[in-house]
Length: 147
Image 1 (spheres, rainbow, N blue to C red):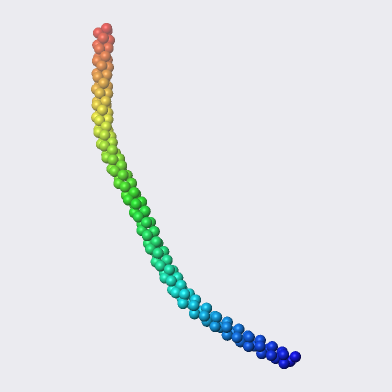
Image 2: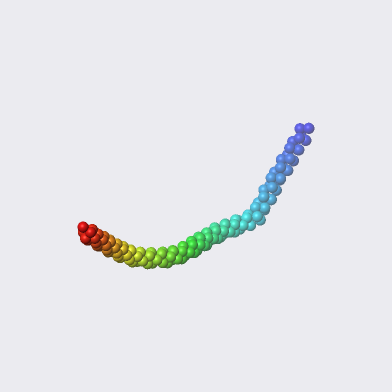
């Protein structure tokens, strides 16, 4: 049995060597047929990734432009509000000036009327005093002629 085992071991060793050689040959053939395609695909994937990066950067720039455009529109709207409110403010200022002028004229008129009223009251008071003086003189003459 030992000879048979040795022959079996030799056969299996040969089969194993042949199997290893076949595997190596098949592997090399597989690698030779797929590696160039894989390298080509890898290069194309690299280009695709680079192009995607460029597209992303371009999109970000366009988004920034859009945001700037919206900001510019908002700024223009704010400036139109500023113009509108400036016009309203100028109108209010003009109205206030007009009111101030009228108040000044009314104060002058009120002062004139006050002075005129005081003058009239003095005239009335003087007239009343003259009336009382006349009445006293008449009363004194009437009283003096009775005696």
